[in-house]
Amino acid sequence: MNKMKSDKLLLSIIRKTNKKAVLGKYKTVTRCRACDSSDLHKIFSLGLVPRPNGFLKKYMLSLKEEYFPLSISFCGKCGMVQLDQLVEPETMFGDYVYLTSASKPMVEHLESFADTVYKRFKLTPRSLVVDIGSNDGTFLRHFKKLGTKILGVDPAKNIARVANKNGIPTIADFFSTNLSKSIIAKHKKADVITAVNVVAHVPNWNDLFEGVNRLLDDNGVFIAEFPYLLDFVKKAEFDTIYHEHLSYISIRPLEVALNEQGLEIIDAERYSIHGGSLRVYVQKMNGRRKKTATVKRLLSAEIKFGTNKKKSYVAFSGSIIKIKKDTNRFLNKISKNKGSIIGYGASAKGNIFLNYVQITKEKLPLIVDSTKYKHGLFTPGVHIPVVPEEKILDLKPDYVLVLAWNFADTILEKNRKLIKSGIKFVVAIPKLRIYK
Ligand code: JHZ
Image (cartoon, rainbow, N blue to C red; front, side, top):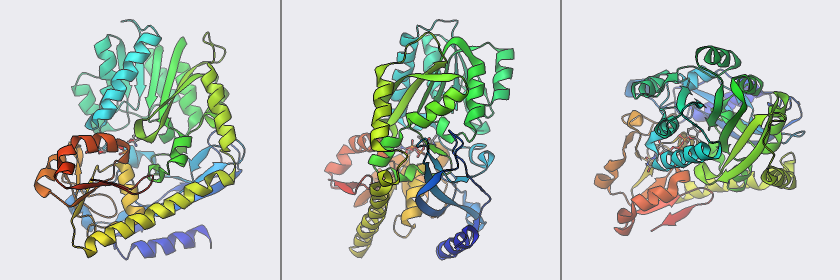
């Protein structure tokens, strides 16, 4: 079946639950983002889904809603894993609802991240830290406290406005080679450039890394952090596949793309945040710092895993199908027994989970969340209302499905009293578990 026919067939299935579903515009990616090879092989398709952060206001529920195919492939040459579709970035990031400051574990992670960087690279009041994808300025706020110069860049105009109001100077734009030139003209070269959960979102790596190389001082460091491919595959974190995440990054392809733009990885560290992330430290090619043994060790682990081999992704695909089956079986049992259940954490990944598993508001009538921007909105596709986190105290459901599984420890800990009172918390990824 050709692509167009299969999209139309999938759309007709979705229209059974969402009559307003239409096919949105997207481009198909045919070459590897890292090495430009066309040797791409499909890993898994999640069908058609709406934009992951496409929350709707009430009046929008009666309007058309765009859906896009969602699938990932690996590159047979360099092992890069990437999305097969490209949705116009402007429509995803121009007006954003995700706030870094809404998740306490992330705020704490960024605080210790800033401390580490400040000490390791001996920053001073003259040092300039530029944060790409700076969101509400949570990360830069820590550098400001430490006393460095700071500058944020973020395409979400609504959120950049908030950051500026809170004293974090932020350019409301996509970072690019062109923008790096104007930053140098107005400020100076950067001693540190950071990009936390950003590289995976950028379609054109050459332009990003060329811009980084231009903006970086000769002795500067570029530090990027992103969910790590090996964690993603091994822990079946399939709902982090969404249209904002164009790449599922490992060291090997990233190094290919960085080298191409005159940059090299000198160190890497693994963190548990967001289900398992990798932080890489990068300098200009043949810079003064030596490469650590960790980079080599991780590279060998990637080769051993076989990031460019079909067989490495078979168990991952099997787990996705099993999670869908187990969750549906579990929810059906609850509704058969007339039990009540709500969701916890209206995350982008949660929206993919709900749409892929086909969890409608009949099965999950409400989601609580700590982000003020999401309150009063409805989740994309399945239209479940989002309410403040504290509402859980009035609702007292029998079960709570934790959609922000990456913060399950924090969410379980802060709701310990509710769990003791008999409310059962459920986490579906990497496999269905009930906490009581
Ligand atoms: P969270 C984000 O994705 C955004 P999302 C982005 N696309 C990215 O790359 C990844 O992170 C890595 C809420 N919450 O962070 C807040 C509570 O209600 O998993 C958030 O809405 N109570 C840039 O959206 C959501 O859960 C809590 O106690 O998939 C978590 O969203 C906590 C801790 C969170 O990311």
